[in-house]
Length: 233
Image (cartoon, rainbow, N blue to C red; front, side, top):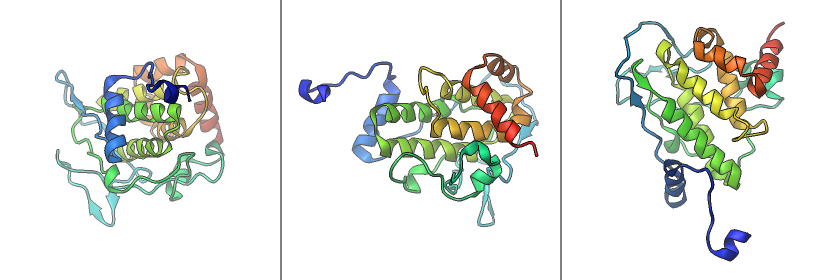
């Protein structure tokens, strides 16, 4: 390869914190997730869409306490034996193991994540951090890192409480995943966020950010329409 002959590689359009996580993975086999931020201007609201049976917070009969130090349980991996849009999101996520194009499987300890517990906790940086690592791994063929980033993101979504104030966090993840400059073709990352959006659509549609995303059209709007149509019996 050109990089091997020159003894250097130039990574265009890669942010510093993303490259730092790539280096962490190269040396340790894992990387530290981005930190969430706090919306200081937040006005408390009791309205929230709690994770349902699809993204259950209960494993082995133990309910997770809502504290800052709580880490979410590990989810079962998802198996998609058919095209993802031929089956309901609930079926896809309850099937057990997710079949991805990435090789290898991340260990359980690598995918322990912090569960959000307050509406003021902004998880945009967390979601995008995992997604950007995934895009880097996809671009450079780092299959193990790709599998790890996808599983970290999936586990975070599974334990995420979708408060009303946190809906925009999900919209930003959708916008990034479906940006043509990042991932021009359908892949596991888009499959995951699309399934989540379909499952949470009753909550997401009540935001101006959702309407703006739909009005932008493009691949997301098209695939969302197909996914929703496939659920109509």
